[in-house]
Image (cartoon, rainbow, N blue to C red; front, top):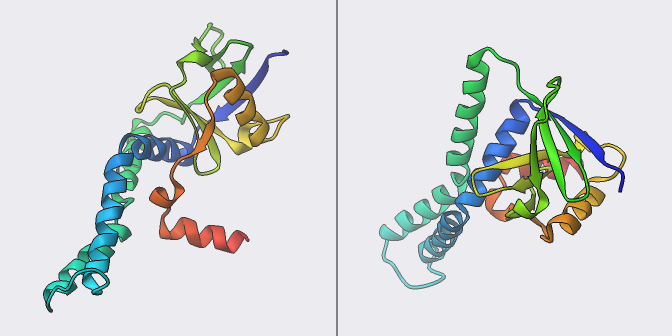
Length: 192
């Protein structure tokens, strides 16, 4: 296998997406409980299950609606704070160069003549697809992002298949129904 390279120029969008993916993965059980609780409250509020007298049924309906509408607020807030910290530092967003080999890949800052850090594919805990990018998670808090636009010479699906074959992990979609926002759904519908 001939080693290949991917260059990722980070931006507010990639940092935000990476932060959101990390949050979604580390809080997936809490988000699932929030969605299930919201749906049950809505069903109680509209008298589909049980019978709660007025005006209490309105409280159940209100909680169910608000819980669903605001499911992404913590992730959005955290992503916004991380991006703001980088912007306030006055430094540009970093550019990372990844060189993929047979058993591992090397990551280093662009322009750095040093060796960088070598990561064995076996260290992969999760391989995920989320918001037009592939994520290589070392743990729930540490991950590398590979936006589709940075992958040259192969399709994102081919790159994911390559990583899957090296890591032994399937590339899974990160619960899009838990992480979808109203705006992402509208953008997706307009694109179709």
